[in-house]
Length: 314
Image (cartoon, rainbow, N blue to C red; front, side, top):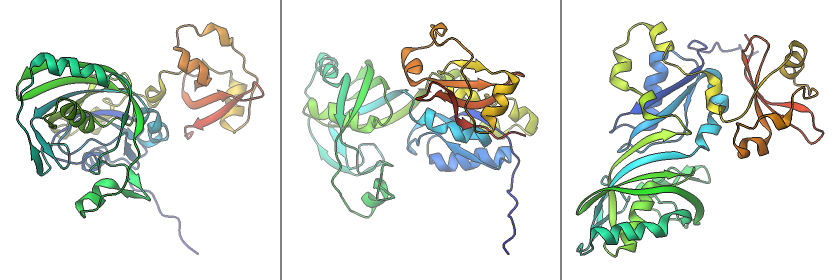
């Protein structure tokens, strides 16, 4: 009979907003943080390329159950592109495949951005982390393979030119999940007739978390007191903070935590300070009478409050 394997690490839960340094993969950054916290379980919420820096939310313990909500969140980037040069990976880590003269003006660049705001179609790069049949595209690309990729819709909410020092230019972009900034820069270069690729990429925010909440890897590694590290973690429920908060009675919390539905004992019309999307989804952050987060609940088709995703109880 197989023995139960004891999980290594401690059951610490929370969210760390890491300022990922350049030159390492998101997975390497994740493993570094997991080791620092001696955490039993950890996951990140959306890869950044090795070239890229900036916000990489790391979910520890029970927070990993809600990482998808950060994966699906809108994100803001600052990116610098180089006009006149295309690479196979659409960034400076790739091989140059084409060079063209740059004869455009600053106004040409600014005008071209109009065509990339709102909902646009993007074809994922072969050097993206998108998986096809379980295999990341970038691994196939490194093997010299190219497969057909379907264009898919993404939304660019904000696209501003913040600097032009031709042949370089810098943009600030707020976009929906699944947007590839390298593709965006390359497509802008094609629209201008000269091509372009990314030289610097920084993620500024994820789902409303701002850059001043991030911690650098070096500063984290300099902290020797693990309790001090723990104090840097955000509560688990901040991953889903856009949803209305609902504090349950003792009985309702008990039944929800045991997988049962309860009669909603709140006024659905009263949550006027929550955005309409959150209300339409009818998801709620559930807290017990002691203000402890117990998970997410939703209103089912019978009008009952049902558990959707719960945190483990100590």
